Image 1 (cartoon, rainbow, N blue to C red):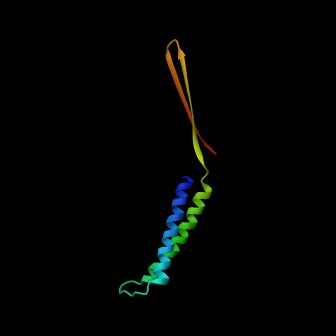
Image 2: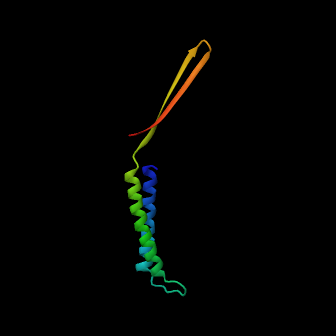
Image 3: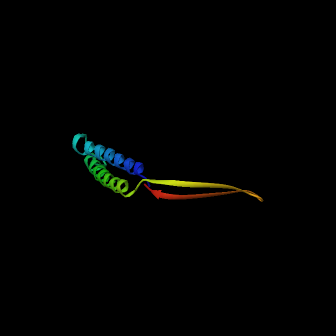
Length: 90
């Protein structure tokens, strides 16, 4: 995983927490069958947990890049091509 994935999780957590807070504290409508403030509380908790998970993912994933070395040699039998790829942390 990379940092942009962690950033996406952080943003998703913030959105969930914001929607949950709105449902918990700002909506005064009542319904039968389920409680809007309880749904808001659940979304708020899930949003905070998702936000914290996103921070962990963003901090634990370093910047990676792939280094590819290509070597082409002409020999009496023909052209020999060798490719070496390796991942490294930046």
